[in-house]
Length: 145
Length: 194
Image (cartoon, rainbow over all chains, first blue to last red; front, side, top):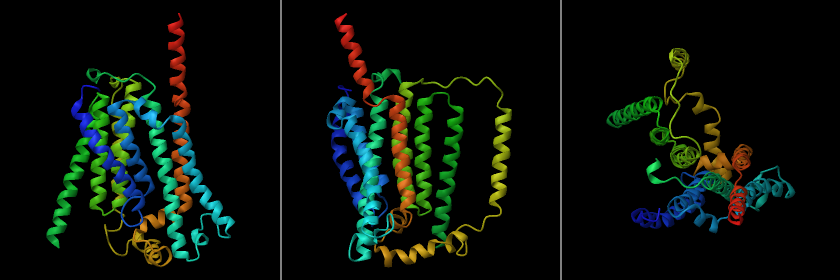
């Protein structure tokens, strides 16, 4: 893709706003549409766009497959672990009320933590699947499509 | 008020028309690259339909997952397989008959549905008012969808995250994520030695 200078310049301009938008969707999910699932996908898309234009190796230099697999498991652990923590604090599994003195604040905290777990897993899984597909074969030449 | 309703009706009809045309085009085309791109268009049109139903969270997910990442992953699958569908050898009569009967049954079933958007629909009177009343008091966040998703139905969402995680495990086991490229390097190293 070295000769596609328009693609390279435009994607370089687009990737930072995409990442910023993913974080906005993640942390603004309690107030507007969105949440961990959508934010994770948008976050992954920024890296996939980077990999499509600059090559999969350039992406796996930043995010090696080993790290992606670790992050995918970590997100599930954050979600499931929140449930264990609330149990240890004396509430039901995923009963967030025990997380803070004020139950309403505790619910908001629980939702934020759980959504971070969802976002981490979804982003890591999408990137891991993409890398698995893309690094399997040599890239296709433009004229083959 | 009525002008707005007519506008929504026109948009709905146009979107459904494009949806049907896209579906017909997908069944007619044999080039799988075009089919994948049209499937992305189909998802985007579905997302627009969800917007007209005021289901912003669903529309958002459909646009991001259906139109965005699924298209990329299907293109990745195409790169590993063939670009063109095999020509159909058998007659299309039986599949068409089954589709027509199934479609007619579904349309017959919708005749019993309550009028769209009526205030006494089961969807309006079952658990939804309970969630809408309890969320500001118990959770204190404006987005009821997030409250239902992450708190009231936290178990379901945990299950969904595990499903996503399991999908990754399955794909990585089938395609060998990361491990495969190392083996390629080994092979090329051996070739260099030869």
